[in-house]
Length: 166
View 1 (cartoon, helix red, strand yellow):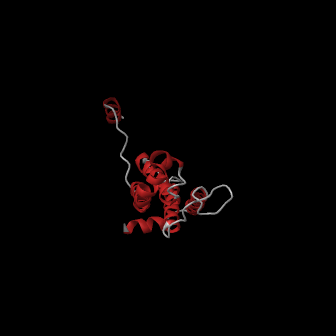
View 2 (view 1 turned 90 degrees about the horizontal axis):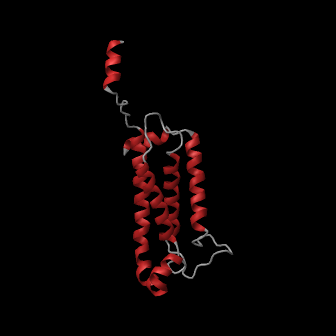
View 3 (view 1 turned 180 degrees about the vertical axis):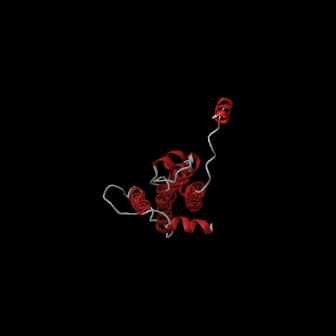
């Protein structure tokens, strides 16, 4: 973990700009439909919880940093598809964690209004924690794999014989 701080200090400015832009877009794309940012397009029947903005902010920062790891990764560091999936899952879980339990159409279809309040609302803090864990793990996985050594390409027997002759 201590090495990650040094890795962050060595990030080029382009990565930081991508992280900032992605974090801001994440806030906008989640806060408007969940009505954390009040607009005439969306409404919310239940007021947001006290932890909605801190969770959204932390998730947005982590999302920005995970996205920035895809910008100009060093040679020999293969991109990891699994870590990218964790980041996307964390982003999606954040949307459900900070959203209104009875305003979400998927939750309403699955549980109904009473079920949303009785079963989904108590789960939202756990979803918030899960989103942060998923995004944090995705960032950790992306950054630790960036400094890993690439293996040399596998050669065939014919190539090895040719190398010995030359």
